[in-house]
Amino acid sequence: MSIKTRMIKERVYFFLSYVSVGITLFILGSIIFYTFINGFRSWNLDFFLLPESSPLDPRQGIAHAIQGSVIVSFTAAALATPISILAAIYLSEYASDKIRGYISNILEIMASIPSIVVGIITYLLFVEPLRTFSAFAGSMALTIMMIPYMTRVCEDTFLSIGKEYREAGLALGLHKWKVSTYIVLRMGMRGIITGFALAFGRIFGETAPLLFTALGSRTFFTGFLNPVSSITLLIYEYSKSPFETWINIAWGAAALLMIIILFINILIRFVVGKRI
Amino acid sequence: MNIKVKIRNLNVWYGKKHVLKFFSLDIFENAVTAIIGPSGCGKTTLLRVINRLHETVPGARVDGKVYIDGINIYSDEVNPVEVRRRVGMIFQYPIVFPHLSIYKNVAIGLILNGYKDKEFVRKRVINSLKEVGLWNEVKDRLDDRATELSGGQKQRLAIARAIALRPEILLMDEPTSSLDPSSTARIESLIIRLKENYTIVLVTHLIQQAARVADYIAFLYDGRLIEYGPADEILKRPKKNLTERYLVREL
Image 1 (cartoon, rainbow over the protein chains, first blue to last red):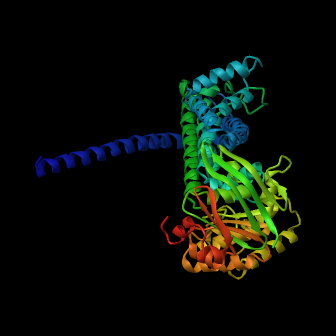
Image 2: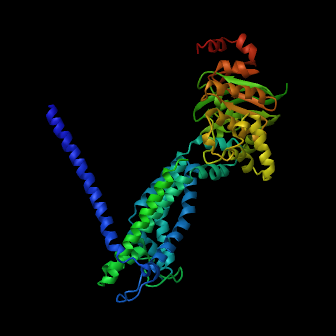
Image 3: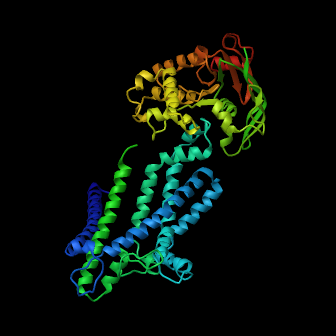
Protein backbone atom coordinates (compact mmCIF):
# COMPACT_ATOMS: atom_id res chain seq x y z
CA MET A 1 0.00 0.00 0.00
CA SER A 2 1.51 3.29 -1.05
CA ILE A 3 1.83 6.23 1.28
CA LYS A 4 -0.67 8.13 -0.81
CA THR A 5 -3.45 5.56 -0.48
CA ARG A 6 -2.77 5.33 3.22
CA MET A 7 -3.08 9.08 3.58
CA ILE A 8 -6.31 9.05 1.64
CA LYS A 9 -7.65 6.26 3.83
CA GLU A 10 -6.64 8.20 6.91
CA ARG A 11 -8.41 11.32 5.66
CA VAL A 12 -11.57 9.37 4.80
CA TYR A 13 -11.51 7.75 8.21
CA PHE A 14 -11.19 11.11 9.97
CA PHE A 15 -13.85 12.63 7.79
CA LEU A 16 -16.29 9.83 8.59
CA SER A 17 -15.68 10.05 12.32
CA TYR A 18 -16.16 13.83 12.28
CA VAL A 19 -19.38 13.41 10.33
CA SER A 20 -20.61 10.83 12.83
CA VAL A 21 -19.88 13.12 15.76
CA GLY A 22 -21.60 15.92 13.85
CA ILE A 23 -24.73 13.86 13.25
CA THR A 24 -24.90 12.85 16.92
CA LEU A 25 -24.47 16.39 18.16
CA PHE A 26 -26.92 17.68 15.58
CA ILE A 27 -29.62 15.25 16.67
CA LEU A 28 -29.07 15.97 20.36
CA GLY A 29 -28.83 19.70 19.72
CA SER A 30 -31.98 19.85 17.64
CA ILE A 31 -33.97 17.87 20.20
CA ILE A 32 -32.90 20.22 22.96
CA PHE A 33 -33.25 23.33 20.80
CA TYR A 34 -36.67 22.42 19.40
CA THR A 35 -38.04 21.37 22.78
CA PHE A 36 -36.75 24.48 24.51
CA ILE A 37 -37.90 26.89 21.78
CA ASN A 38 -41.39 25.41 21.79
CA GLY A 39 -41.44 24.78 25.51
CA PHE A 40 -40.28 28.09 26.94
CA ARG A 41 -43.10 29.90 25.14
CA SER A 42 -45.65 28.36 27.46
CA TRP A 43 -43.61 29.00 30.61
CA ASN A 44 -45.09 31.62 32.88
CA LEU A 45 -46.13 31.82 36.49
CA ASP A 46 -49.48 30.15 35.81
CA PHE A 47 -47.70 27.25 34.11
CA PHE A 48 -45.86 26.39 37.34
CA LEU A 49 -48.53 27.32 39.88
CA LEU A 50 -51.91 26.29 38.45
CA PRO A 51 -53.34 22.85 37.74
CA GLU A 52 -55.23 21.79 34.65
CA SER A 53 -58.29 23.64 33.48
CA SER A 54 -60.53 23.57 30.42
CA PRO A 55 -58.48 23.51 27.22
CA LEU A 56 -60.13 26.84 26.35
CA ASP A 57 -58.98 28.51 29.55
CA PRO A 58 -55.71 30.39 28.92
CA ARG A 59 -54.89 30.39 32.62
CA GLN A 60 -53.75 26.90 33.52
CA GLY A 61 -50.59 24.97 34.28
CA ILE A 62 -48.95 21.71 35.21
CA ALA A 63 -48.53 22.23 38.95
CA HIS A 64 -50.60 19.10 39.64
CA ALA A 65 -48.34 17.04 37.36
CA ILE A 66 -45.14 18.40 38.93
CA GLN A 67 -46.57 17.61 42.34
CA GLY A 68 -47.58 14.11 41.21
CA SER A 69 -44.18 13.38 39.69
CA VAL A 70 -42.41 14.55 42.81
CA ILE A 71 -44.67 12.52 45.13
CA VAL A 72 -44.56 9.33 43.08
CA SER A 73 -40.82 9.50 42.32
CA PHE A 74 -39.76 10.42 45.83
CA THR A 75 -41.97 7.74 47.35
CA ALA A 76 -40.38 5.23 44.99
CA ALA A 77 -36.91 6.55 45.85
CA ALA A 78 -37.64 6.39 49.57
CA LEU A 79 -38.66 2.74 49.20
CA ALA A 80 -36.04 1.66 46.69
CA THR A 81 -32.98 3.37 48.21
CA PRO A 82 -32.77 1.49 51.52
CA ILE A 83 -33.71 -1.79 49.83
CA SER A 84 -31.07 -1.29 47.14
CA ILE A 85 -28.33 -0.32 49.60
CA LEU A 86 -29.06 -3.23 51.91
CA ALA A 87 -29.27 -5.64 48.98
CA ALA A 88 -25.93 -4.35 47.68
CA ILE A 89 -24.36 -4.71 51.13
CA TYR A 90 -25.66 -8.27 51.30
CA LEU A 91 -24.28 -9.06 47.86
CA SER A 92 -20.86 -7.50 48.39
CA GLU A 93 -20.28 -8.38 52.05
CA TYR A 94 -22.21 -11.53 52.88
CA ALA A 95 -23.20 -13.51 49.79
CA SER A 96 -20.97 -16.29 48.50
CA ASP A 97 -19.62 -15.85 44.98
CA LYS A 98 -22.16 -18.35 43.70
CA ILE A 99 -25.20 -16.61 45.22
CA ARG A 100 -23.86 -13.21 44.18
CA GLY A 101 -23.59 -14.53 40.62
CA TYR A 102 -27.18 -15.78 40.61
CA ILE A 103 -28.63 -12.62 42.10
CA SER A 104 -26.58 -10.35 39.83
CA ASN A 105 -28.03 -12.21 36.86
CA ILE A 106 -31.55 -11.80 38.20
CA LEU A 107 -30.96 -8.08 38.70
CA GLU A 108 -29.59 -7.85 35.18
CA ILE A 109 -32.76 -9.44 33.85
CA MET A 110 -34.95 -7.24 36.03
CA ALA A 111 -33.20 -4.13 34.75
CA SER A 112 -33.79 -5.14 31.17
CA ILE A 113 -37.52 -5.84 31.52
CA PRO A 114 -39.31 -3.31 29.28
CA SER A 115 -40.88 -0.63 31.44
CA ILE A 116 -44.32 -1.22 29.95
CA VAL A 117 -44.14 -4.80 31.23
CA VAL A 118 -43.25 -3.51 34.70
CA GLY A 119 -46.39 -1.37 34.39
CA ILE A 120 -48.55 -4.39 33.54
CA ILE A 121 -47.09 -6.48 36.37
CA THR A 122 -47.66 -3.67 38.84
CA TYR A 123 -51.21 -3.34 37.54
CA LEU A 124 -51.85 -7.01 38.30
CA LEU A 125 -50.18 -6.79 41.72
CA PHE A 126 -51.45 -3.49 43.06
CA VAL A 127 -54.21 -2.04 40.87
CA GLU A 128 -56.51 -5.01 40.38
CA PRO A 129 -56.54 -6.18 44.01
CA LEU A 130 -57.11 -2.63 45.29
CA ARG A 131 -59.66 -1.92 42.53
CA THR A 132 -58.23 1.52 41.87
CA PHE A 133 -55.48 3.22 39.96
CA SER A 134 -53.37 4.99 42.51
CA ALA A 135 -50.30 7.03 43.37
CA PHE A 136 -49.32 4.06 45.51
CA ALA A 137 -49.35 1.68 42.53
CA GLY A 138 -47.39 4.24 40.48
CA SER A 139 -44.79 4.46 43.22
CA MET A 140 -44.53 0.69 43.38
CA ALA A 141 -43.97 0.47 39.63
CA LEU A 142 -41.15 3.01 39.84
CA THR A 143 -39.72 1.25 42.89
CA ILE A 144 -39.54 -1.95 40.88
CA MET A 145 -37.80 -0.02 38.10
CA MET A 146 -35.33 1.62 40.44
CA ILE A 147 -34.15 -1.27 42.61
CA PRO A 148 -32.12 -3.27 40.04
CA TYR A 149 -30.36 -0.16 38.75
CA MET A 150 -29.42 1.22 42.07
CA THR A 151 -28.48 -2.13 43.58
CA ARG A 152 -26.05 -2.82 40.76
CA VAL A 153 -24.33 0.55 40.98
CA CYS A 154 -24.04 0.27 44.78
CA GLU A 155 -22.78 -3.30 44.58
CA ASP A 156 -20.08 -2.30 42.09
CA THR A 157 -19.08 0.53 44.37
CA PHE A 158 -18.82 -1.65 47.46
CA LEU A 159 -16.92 -4.35 45.60
CA SER A 160 -14.40 -1.79 44.40
CA ILE A 161 -13.45 -0.94 47.99
CA GLY A 162 -10.31 -2.92 48.81
CA LYS A 163 -10.64 -5.79 51.26
CA GLU A 164 -7.78 -4.28 53.30
CA TYR A 165 -10.18 -1.63 54.64
CA ARG A 166 -12.56 -4.31 55.83
CA GLU A 167 -9.70 -6.23 57.42
CA ALA A 168 -8.42 -3.07 59.12
CA GLY A 169 -11.90 -2.64 60.57
CA LEU A 170 -12.22 -6.26 61.66
CA ALA A 171 -8.74 -6.09 63.20
CA LEU A 172 -10.05 -3.35 65.51
CA GLY A 173 -12.44 -5.87 66.97
CA LEU A 174 -15.47 -4.53 65.13
CA HIS A 175 -18.40 -6.74 64.27
CA LYS A 176 -18.89 -7.33 60.59
CA TRP A 177 -22.09 -5.31 60.45
CA LYS A 178 -20.25 -2.33 61.89
CA VAL A 179 -17.52 -2.68 59.29
CA SER A 180 -20.21 -2.87 56.59
CA THR A 181 -22.07 0.15 57.91
CA TYR A 182 -19.38 2.50 59.11
CA ILE A 183 -16.54 1.66 56.73
CA VAL A 184 -17.82 0.09 53.51
CA LEU A 185 -21.05 2.06 53.30
CA ARG A 186 -19.45 5.37 54.25
CA MET A 187 -16.54 4.90 51.90
CA GLY A 188 -18.98 4.09 49.13
CA MET A 189 -21.14 7.16 49.71
CA ARG A 190 -20.22 8.77 46.42
CA GLY A 191 -21.12 5.60 44.55
CA ILE A 192 -24.43 5.43 46.40
CA ILE A 193 -25.24 9.02 45.50
CA THR A 194 -24.32 8.35 41.87
CA GLY A 195 -26.45 5.21 41.81
CA PHE A 196 -29.33 7.07 43.37
CA ALA A 197 -29.12 9.95 40.92
CA LEU A 198 -28.83 7.66 37.89
CA ALA A 199 -31.79 5.58 38.97
CA PHE A 200 -33.81 8.60 40.02
CA GLY A 201 -33.14 10.39 36.75
CA ARG A 202 -34.39 7.32 34.97
CA ILE A 203 -37.62 6.81 36.88
CA PHE A 204 -38.42 10.51 36.87
CA GLY A 205 -38.67 10.42 33.08
CA GLU A 206 -40.66 7.17 32.92
CA THR A 207 -44.13 7.12 31.40
CA ALA A 208 -44.96 3.51 30.59
CA PRO A 209 -44.96 2.11 34.14
CA LEU A 210 -47.32 4.89 35.22
CA LEU A 211 -49.88 4.43 32.46
CA PHE A 212 -51.68 1.50 34.11
CA THR A 213 -50.85 2.42 37.67
CA ALA A 214 -50.94 6.14 38.51
CA LEU A 215 -53.18 6.65 35.47
CA GLY A 216 -53.07 10.44 35.54
CA SER A 217 -55.37 13.01 37.03
CA ARG A 218 -56.68 16.47 36.32
CA THR A 219 -56.30 17.69 39.87
CA PHE A 220 -53.75 17.91 42.62
CA PHE A 221 -52.81 14.87 44.69
CA THR A 222 -55.76 13.63 46.75
CA GLY A 223 -54.23 10.65 48.52
CA PHE A 224 -52.09 7.62 47.83
CA LEU A 225 -55.06 5.44 46.93
CA ASN A 226 -56.28 7.80 44.22
CA PRO A 227 -54.94 8.33 40.71
CA VAL A 228 -52.34 11.03 40.34
CA SER A 229 -50.81 12.93 37.46
CA SER A 230 -47.18 13.13 36.46
CA ILE A 231 -45.21 15.32 34.08
CA THR A 232 -44.71 12.44 31.68
CA LEU A 233 -48.35 11.30 31.78
CA LEU A 234 -49.40 14.88 31.14
CA ILE A 235 -47.11 15.14 28.13
CA TYR A 236 -48.51 11.87 26.83
CA GLU A 237 -52.11 12.96 27.24
CA TYR A 238 -51.77 16.55 26.06
CA SER A 239 -49.67 15.78 23.00
CA LYS A 240 -52.46 13.51 21.74
CA SER A 241 -55.13 16.16 22.34
CA PRO A 242 -56.54 18.36 19.58
CA PHE A 243 -56.23 21.56 21.64
CA GLU A 244 -53.42 23.97 20.91
CA THR A 245 -53.29 25.19 24.52
CA TRP A 246 -52.61 21.69 25.76
CA ILE A 247 -50.13 20.88 23.01
CA ASN A 248 -48.17 24.00 23.95
CA ILE A 249 -48.30 23.05 27.60
CA ALA A 250 -47.00 19.60 26.66
CA TRP A 251 -43.98 21.26 25.04
CA GLY A 252 -43.45 23.33 28.16
CA ALA A 253 -43.66 20.22 30.31
CA ALA A 254 -41.21 18.40 28.03
CA ALA A 255 -38.73 21.28 28.35
CA LEU A 256 -39.08 21.22 32.13
CA LEU A 257 -38.58 17.45 32.25
CA MET A 258 -35.43 17.72 30.14
CA ILE A 259 -34.03 20.45 32.33
CA ILE A 260 -34.66 18.36 35.45
CA ILE A 261 -32.98 15.30 33.91
CA LEU A 262 -30.05 17.39 32.64
CA PHE A 263 -29.71 18.92 36.08
CA ILE A 264 -29.59 15.48 37.69
CA ASN A 265 -26.91 14.41 35.21
CA ILE A 266 -24.82 17.50 35.90
CA LEU A 267 -25.23 16.82 39.61
CA ILE A 268 -23.88 13.28 39.09
CA ARG A 269 -20.83 14.68 37.29
CA PHE A 270 -20.28 17.13 40.09
CA VAL A 271 -20.47 14.41 42.73
CA VAL A 272 -18.37 11.89 40.81
CA GLY A 273 -15.86 14.48 39.67
CA LYS A 274 -15.11 15.63 43.18
CA ARG A 275 -12.08 13.87 44.58
CA ILE A 276 -12.26 11.94 47.84
CA MET B 1 10.02 -13.61 80.82
CA ASN B 2 6.34 -14.47 80.61
CA ILE B 3 4.93 -16.32 77.68
CA LYS B 4 2.12 -14.25 76.17
CA VAL B 5 1.14 -16.38 73.20
CA LYS B 6 1.53 -20.11 73.07
CA ILE B 7 0.92 -21.86 69.76
CA ARG B 8 0.58 -25.64 69.86
CA ASN B 9 0.46 -28.08 66.98
CA LEU B 10 -1.20 -25.62 64.65
CA ASN B 11 -2.22 -26.52 61.12
CA VAL B 12 -3.76 -24.05 58.71
CA TRP B 13 -5.21 -24.69 55.30
CA TYR B 14 -6.50 -22.36 52.64
CA GLY B 15 -8.70 -24.65 50.60
CA LYS B 16 -6.43 -27.61 49.88
CA LYS B 17 -3.23 -25.67 50.46
CA HIS B 18 -1.55 -26.64 53.72
CA VAL B 19 -0.02 -23.33 54.81
CA LEU B 20 1.17 -23.92 58.38
CA LYS B 21 2.26 -27.40 59.37
CA PHE B 22 2.36 -28.80 62.92
CA PHE B 23 3.43 -25.43 64.17
CA SER B 24 4.37 -24.66 67.78
CA LEU B 25 5.83 -21.44 69.12
CA ASP B 26 6.05 -19.43 72.35
CA ILE B 27 5.90 -15.65 72.07
CA PHE B 28 7.27 -13.68 75.02
CA GLU B 29 5.60 -10.75 76.67
CA ASN B 30 6.93 -7.22 76.10
CA ALA B 31 9.38 -8.38 73.49
CA VAL B 32 9.63 -8.04 69.73
CA THR B 33 9.43 -11.39 67.99
CA ALA B 34 10.35 -11.23 64.33
CA ILE B 35 9.02 -13.81 61.90
CA ILE B 36 11.33 -14.24 58.95
CA GLY B 37 11.43 -16.58 55.99
CA PRO B 38 11.10 -16.63 52.23
CA SER B 39 7.93 -15.45 50.46
CA GLY B 40 5.00 -17.80 50.79
CA CYS B 41 6.40 -19.63 53.82
CA GLY B 42 3.37 -18.75 55.97
CA LYS B 43 4.61 -15.67 57.87
CA THR B 44 1.51 -13.59 57.27
CA THR B 45 -0.78 -16.53 57.92
CA LEU B 46 0.91 -17.04 61.27
CA LEU B 47 0.09 -13.44 62.22
CA ARG B 48 -3.48 -13.70 61.04
CA VAL B 49 -4.01 -16.83 63.09
CA ILE B 50 -3.16 -14.95 66.28
CA ASN B 51 -6.07 -12.49 65.84
CA ARG B 52 -8.30 -14.94 63.99
CA LEU B 53 -8.41 -12.69 60.95
CA HIS B 54 -7.56 -15.54 58.58
CA GLU B 55 -11.01 -17.01 59.12
CA THR B 56 -12.58 -14.09 57.27
CA VAL B 57 -11.11 -15.63 54.10
CA PRO B 58 -13.45 -18.22 52.57
CA GLY B 59 -11.98 -21.70 52.63
CA ALA B 60 -9.61 -21.12 55.54
CA ARG B 61 -9.39 -23.90 58.13
CA VAL B 62 -7.47 -24.21 61.38
CA ASP B 63 -6.58 -27.13 63.58
CA GLY B 64 -4.59 -26.82 66.77
CA LYS B 65 -4.42 -24.40 69.68
CA VAL B 66 -3.38 -20.81 70.22
CA TYR B 67 -3.29 -19.65 73.82
CA ILE B 68 -3.22 -16.02 74.83
CA ASP B 69 -2.56 -15.73 78.58
CA GLY B 70 -3.40 -19.40 78.85
CA ILE B 71 -6.78 -19.22 77.17
CA ASN B 72 -7.24 -21.06 73.89
CA ILE B 73 -8.64 -18.47 71.51
CA TYR B 74 -9.97 -21.23 69.28
CA SER B 75 -12.21 -22.75 71.94
CA ASP B 76 -15.94 -22.45 71.32
CA GLU B 77 -16.55 -19.95 74.10
CA VAL B 78 -14.20 -17.37 72.63
CA ASN B 79 -15.60 -14.76 70.28
CA PRO B 80 -13.16 -13.76 67.52
CA VAL B 81 -14.31 -10.16 67.84
CA GLU B 82 -13.14 -10.11 71.47
CA VAL B 83 -9.81 -11.58 70.44
CA ARG B 84 -9.29 -8.84 67.88
CA ARG B 85 -9.92 -6.16 70.46
CA ARG B 86 -7.02 -7.51 72.48
CA VAL B 87 -4.75 -8.08 69.50
CA GLY B 88 -4.06 -5.07 67.30
CA MET B 89 -2.82 -5.36 63.74
CA ILE B 90 -0.76 -3.20 61.41
CA PHE B 91 -0.79 -4.01 57.72
CA GLN B 92 1.74 -3.95 54.96
CA TYR B 93 0.27 -0.84 53.38
CA PRO B 94 -0.67 2.01 55.68
CA ILE B 95 -4.44 1.92 55.88
CA VAL B 96 -6.22 5.16 56.54
CA PHE B 97 -9.93 5.49 56.04
CA PRO B 98 -10.30 8.08 53.28
CA HIS B 99 -13.73 9.20 54.47
CA LEU B 100 -12.51 10.09 57.95
CA SER B 101 -10.45 12.91 59.42
CA ILE B 102 -7.09 12.34 61.08
CA TYR B 103 -8.78 12.44 64.48
CA LYS B 104 -11.58 10.07 63.51
CA ASN B 105 -9.13 7.65 61.95
CA VAL B 106 -7.66 7.08 65.40
CA ALA B 107 -10.94 7.35 67.27
CA ILE B 108 -12.96 4.98 65.06
CA GLY B 109 -12.00 1.83 66.94
CA LEU B 110 -12.95 3.40 70.26
CA ILE B 111 -16.17 4.97 69.03
CA LEU B 112 -17.42 1.87 67.24
CA ASN B 113 -16.46 -0.31 70.16
CA GLY B 114 -18.86 1.65 72.32
CA TYR B 115 -16.70 4.17 74.17
CA LYS B 116 -19.25 6.92 74.62
CA ASP B 117 -17.39 9.38 76.87
CA LYS B 118 -16.11 11.96 74.37
CA GLU B 119 -13.51 13.39 76.73
CA PHE B 120 -12.14 9.91 77.38
CA VAL B 121 -11.95 9.18 73.64
CA ARG B 122 -10.25 12.50 73.01
CA LYS B 123 -7.60 11.85 75.66
CA ARG B 124 -7.00 8.36 74.31
CA VAL B 125 -6.61 9.66 70.77
CA ILE B 126 -4.17 12.36 71.84
CA ASN B 127 -2.15 9.94 73.94
CA SER B 128 -2.01 7.43 71.14
CA LEU B 129 -0.87 10.08 68.66
CA LYS B 130 1.80 11.17 71.15
CA GLU B 131 2.88 7.58 71.66
CA VAL B 132 3.56 7.13 67.95
CA GLY B 133 5.26 10.53 67.71
CA LEU B 134 2.65 12.00 65.40
CA TRP B 135 1.01 14.50 67.74
CA ASN B 136 3.24 17.48 66.96
CA GLU B 137 2.83 16.92 63.24
CA VAL B 138 -0.96 16.73 63.23
CA LYS B 139 -2.20 18.58 66.30
CA ASP B 140 -3.21 21.64 64.28
CA ARG B 141 -5.02 19.70 61.60
CA LEU B 142 -6.89 16.93 63.35
CA ASP B 143 -9.96 17.62 61.24
CA ASP B 144 -8.12 17.38 57.92
CA ARG B 145 -8.53 14.30 55.83
CA ALA B 146 -6.07 11.59 56.75
CA THR B 147 -5.33 10.89 53.08
CA GLU B 148 -3.25 14.07 53.03
CA LEU B 149 -0.58 12.57 55.30
CA SER B 150 2.65 11.08 53.94
CA GLY B 151 3.15 7.31 53.78
CA GLY B 152 5.20 7.18 56.97
CA GLN B 153 2.71 9.39 58.81
CA LYS B 154 -0.15 7.20 57.63
CA GLN B 155 1.54 4.11 58.99
CA ARG B 156 2.10 5.80 62.36
CA LEU B 157 -1.55 6.87 62.27
CA ALA B 158 -2.53 3.24 61.69
CA ILE B 159 -0.40 2.24 64.67
CA ALA B 160 -2.05 4.98 66.76
CA ARG B 161 -5.45 3.60 65.76
CA ALA B 162 -4.44 0.11 66.84
CA ILE B 163 -2.96 1.15 70.19
CA ALA B 164 -5.87 3.49 70.98
CA LEU B 165 -7.74 0.33 71.97
CA ARG B 166 -4.88 -0.57 74.33
CA PRO B 167 -4.40 -4.06 72.96
CA GLU B 168 -1.98 -6.44 74.65
CA ILE B 169 -0.43 -7.71 71.46
CA LEU B 170 0.47 -5.86 68.28
CA LEU B 171 0.82 -7.82 65.06
CA MET B 172 2.79 -6.07 62.35
CA ASP B 173 2.83 -7.41 58.82
CA GLU B 174 5.86 -5.93 57.06
CA PRO B 175 4.88 -2.48 58.29
CA THR B 176 7.70 -0.65 56.52
CA SER B 177 7.65 -2.41 53.16
CA SER B 178 6.06 0.54 51.38
CA LEU B 179 8.02 3.27 53.20
CA ASP B 180 11.18 5.24 52.45
CA PRO B 181 14.31 4.69 54.60
CA SER B 182 13.77 7.61 56.99
CA SER B 183 10.12 6.67 57.64
CA THR B 184 11.28 3.09 58.11
CA ALA B 185 13.81 4.22 60.72
CA ARG B 186 11.11 6.11 62.63
CA ILE B 187 8.78 3.11 62.62
CA GLU B 188 11.59 0.84 63.79
CA SER B 189 12.49 3.05 66.73
CA LEU B 190 8.78 3.27 67.50
CA ILE B 191 8.55 -0.53 67.55
CA ILE B 192 11.38 -0.68 70.07
CA ARG B 193 9.63 1.91 72.26
CA LEU B 194 6.26 0.19 71.99
CA LYS B 195 7.50 -3.13 73.35
CA GLU B 196 7.51 -1.62 76.84
CA ASN B 197 3.73 -1.78 76.78
CA TYR B 198 2.91 -4.32 74.11
CA THR B 199 3.94 -7.74 72.95
CA ILE B 200 4.97 -7.30 69.34
CA VAL B 201 5.03 -9.88 66.57
CA LEU B 202 6.68 -8.52 63.47
CA VAL B 203 6.71 -10.14 60.07
CA THR B 204 9.58 -8.86 58.01
CA HIS B 205 11.44 -9.85 54.90
CA LEU B 206 14.39 -7.67 55.91
CA ILE B 207 16.96 -9.57 57.94
CA GLN B 208 18.59 -6.26 58.93
CA GLN B 209 15.28 -5.03 60.28
CA ALA B 210 14.95 -8.16 62.39
CA ALA B 211 18.51 -7.56 63.61
CA ARG B 212 17.71 -3.95 64.54
CA VAL B 213 14.46 -4.42 66.42
CA ALA B 214 13.87 -8.05 67.34
CA ASP B 215 14.53 -9.77 70.64
CA TYR B 216 13.54 -13.14 69.25
CA ILE B 217 13.53 -14.47 65.74
CA ALA B 218 11.50 -17.32 64.31
CA PHE B 219 12.57 -18.65 60.94
CA LEU B 220 9.85 -20.30 58.88
CA TYR B 221 10.28 -22.39 55.81
CA ASP B 222 7.48 -24.00 53.84
CA GLY B 223 4.95 -23.68 56.66
CA ARG B 224 7.22 -25.14 59.33
CA LEU B 225 9.11 -23.53 62.15
CA ILE B 226 12.75 -24.28 61.38
CA GLU B 227 14.51 -22.39 64.13
CA TYR B 228 13.54 -20.09 66.97
CA GLY B 229 15.51 -18.29 69.63
CA PRO B 230 17.06 -15.02 70.81
CA ALA B 231 17.81 -12.76 67.84
CA ASP B 232 21.55 -12.72 68.41
CA GLU B 233 21.85 -16.47 68.40
CA ILE B 234 19.75 -16.97 65.31
CA LEU B 235 21.61 -14.31 63.37
CA LYS B 236 25.15 -15.16 64.52
CA ARG B 237 25.07 -18.86 65.26
CA PRO B 238 22.19 -20.48 63.44
CA LYS B 239 21.97 -24.15 64.25
CA LYS B 240 20.12 -25.29 61.19
CA ASN B 241 21.52 -25.41 57.72
CA LEU B 242 18.30 -23.95 56.21
CA THR B 243 18.46 -20.91 58.49
CA GLU B 244 22.05 -20.27 57.56
CA ARG B 245 21.26 -20.56 53.89
CA TYR B 246 18.39 -18.08 54.26
CA LEU B 247 20.59 -15.62 56.16
CA VAL B 248 23.23 -15.67 53.46
CA ARG B 249 20.43 -15.32 50.90
CA GLU B 250 20.79 -18.67 49.28
CA LEU B 251 17.07 -19.38 49.63
